[in-house]
Amino acid sequence: MYINDVKSGTTVGDAKPEIVKETIATALVDGNNVLGPVVGRFCIDLAIKKAKEAGIGWVSARNSNHFGIAGWYGLRAVDNGMIGMAFTNTSPLLVPTRAKKEALGTNPICMAAPAKDGDSFVLDMATTAVALGKVEIAHRKGEPIPPGWAIDSSGKETLDPSECECLFPLGGTEKTSGYKGYGLSMMVELFCGILSGAHYGPNIRTWKDTHQKADLGQCYVAIDPNAFEPGFADRLSDLMNICRNLEPAEGETEVLVAGDPERQHMAKCDKQGGILYHPNQIKYANDIAEQLGVEPMKAL
Picture (tube, rainbow, N blue to C red):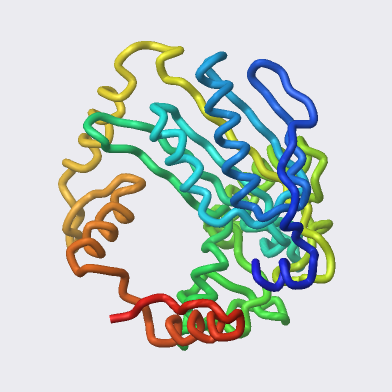
């Protein structure tokens, strides 16, 4: 997607994000249609800078693009001793509760916070039942997807990733509280598209459409815990460990908090000396490298 956007010229490669207006604690940024991670890093660093001065930094951005992993921006704030939040709107994929057609994006939410001794709480989640990337990975692996994830072109649930046209909101149907995921997606849209003046809802281009710019709206927040009651990291560590030390339900091995699965996977990759990829994923990446004339990733 990134490559196609650069090739087609719908993403700009020779510009920089710029501040349109700001106060001591807030800013509106125009991403000038550069790659999303460039906009994201600029904005979270600006939010961190403002939080160091005012206790909080709130930055909304327009004219941005897909910014990759929301958790990266939260963790960047954590590295500076801050609570970090990141939100973005996306191409319409979520079908609102009681509707037949998609109108909102996967609209992810990230909130990360520093605990004691390098520990941290890191929530990074889509407001749909699943992030679209997981459907794409299942497609490349040739595997079915679980129930409650995707909807096909006829509006019915599908387990075939190649038939996925749109996604259920987090929670699924109305009976299983899907309206809560729908509401969270609207909240993210308010922070991102509505607040910044970017495209929003069904006005955003469809996924992988390279014929028009995305103009995504994003929001980045940094909060200095030291502006509040002392002992934040101690209390957070205590709460996290209370949850971790709960007796697991039958058939389960341990209770985790947000960020633990990723830390476990990172430790596993360190132990095995690298990241394991499915052969189809490696072939996909190598084909792109060949097309672009760049060195493929090293595989063992």
